[in-house]
Image (cartoon, rainbow, N blue to C red; front, side, top):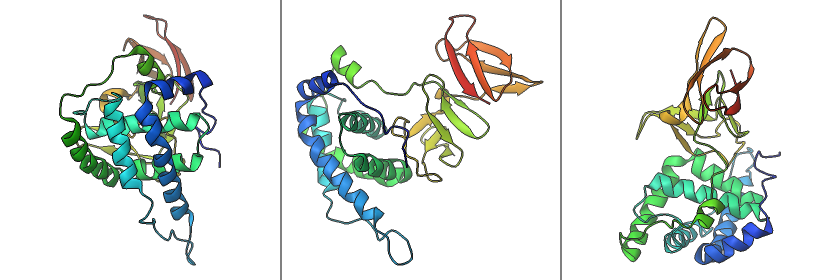
Length: 259
């Protein structure tokens, strides 16, 4: 199976910058990836009924998460008082970036299994680890504003998504999540949770949760669709097609989306 992010790669320049700007995160990532890969091997193993035998309890995942969270705060990747959801999303970006340097795909697949499909359980684990991290570093640690770091960890997705008939897609990137791989949620805020439960086709380029304000639901009537520009939010009225190529008349932003 080829996963959507499988060919995602970064340059040697990016790798050198990662090691320089994030020394503690760089030291913690190998152990985190090792524990993720071991956990993935455990869910690959099937019993005589072709069901997963269960996750090994000796993967070291909990301790590696603790070390990585502490490293993230010390390297100022994220503010210590950020929400649990923000920590999980930053973990997603770090895992994807570390993978892009040529590291283990299986680690990414278990990250997807754990943090998308079992969101409540994994967020509870991160939250419990954060209590210890915040005790160690205090409440004053802030995120770095170094433009080199911000560019290095820029998300490979936009904040402008659309809801199609059987999918959710990113307007500015080639990221599509099919029906059955996301679920409507109301708490803690209205939006969509990405689960990949139906396909198990994990795409770490997609956030775990999309809020309602990020997802445009086109208004469709009489063969026309009214959609919002991903840059300036201008409402654009276009002919309805299965695949629409749209240019905003106000800011000239071009994008594509499916009905």
